[in-house]
Image 1 (cartoon, rainbow over the protein chains, first blue to last red):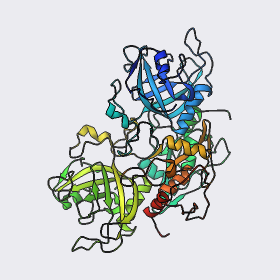
Image 2: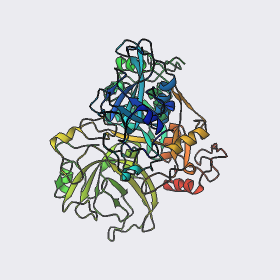
Image 3: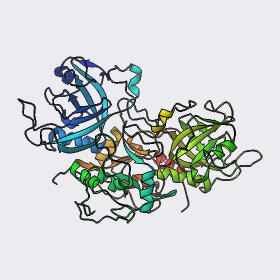
Image 4: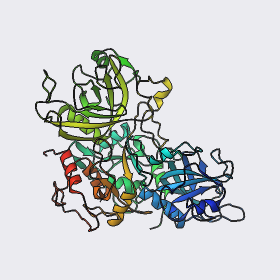
Length: 289
Length: 289
């Protein structure tokens, strides 16, 4: 069951994993990722987790030594890890719970706290602190929920979702999440260079108000990637190729062709791409297909 | 000049249109829409304007009797109207100014107030109160700006932009705007019905975590359209066709083909589209091309 749970409030405390399970907040008594990736528990088991409250970098499951808690093999994109990745692609929200044993200032004093809905903003793999590949998920808390640690009022329950445009106030049973397409001065510049044509397929979407293209950041913006909003880190793509690039269906080679298809991409002389950013993107998700 | 203006603060008051012009906040002394659509002035000239503060429904220019202020001919998608439409497509922010003579609780007591950056969320044409076609623009205020009527601090100046994901804090000179792709339970349903294939072109975007498609609302969500988030009001589209549909490059006929191209769209038996919503979308923007 994706989304909010009947009769459970954001901020509510549960005494044990058993209680979380029985109330359908997080099914299962041991694993951090519930079936379908509908919920997770942050309990401090993974040394690579980062908890900034509204923003979480969460480590996938598997590959750990049950005795020491250290990674001893690579994590794979299967089970709960694949389920979370699917929720990224589908835009499904994830229920987040924090345990009292979590080493974070956002942890509850004891027991487990249901902290409401987050959406998965991106996911990638990298070498963890123990030297093995881990999967990571960037979770961002949805707006319209009470501040972390505060229990929601009855009145809050109609308001969950991303409502950054001030108008979508979905009912509690119908949470809305969003993918955000950013634009900026650099975006306008790269679109002008390519005359709004996709650098991969050459398509330009004609609308009554002019052509449309998207600015795609190669090394992602924001923590933890901190890619720059600069011309050497962006591509002019059609929305379809933007999705394929962001979701790691396609990558660029150092010679500027699409690794997965062999297509050459168009590069204008005035557009100097940074090879390090291209490598960074390529190294985020290398899945054998 | 798109975006913020050097040495001008959000919330700053100007005594006259001349002062707004001289400070480059709104170029021109008469027109409501500046060149390039980089700024607008709300001064109560158009009876169809709606001002809810963070949300504005703005009427385009032209067709008014200068004596009475009433519409006497249709407005056309040219001049300032075309410039605002282009800013919608390109994701450029618009500087909004309110005049003291505006009939709104958000108007300043006197003179003109620069109220910061808004983005154009959608645009459409409709018959105005005087019976002639007008162009309308839905403007939503960017986050990270001081509350309306409050003058920004020096410290605020690094923070303008849509930052709903808590991580993009673009410098003042590099404002970021966003297009939001929404998902919900209804969206998941329609994608499942079509197996993530676009109802228009049949494409399914394959990613390492599964196929990707978008849920497109036919009658738009939110004020003033108030389309429902229901299965009879959504389509399963690839991102490219979603952009074309939202930007009114394409419309559906009552017989479910694409008016502009003649393509038949795929409709499954369990997917009953509401003809009124299709007509509503078709009537939003009917541009002769």
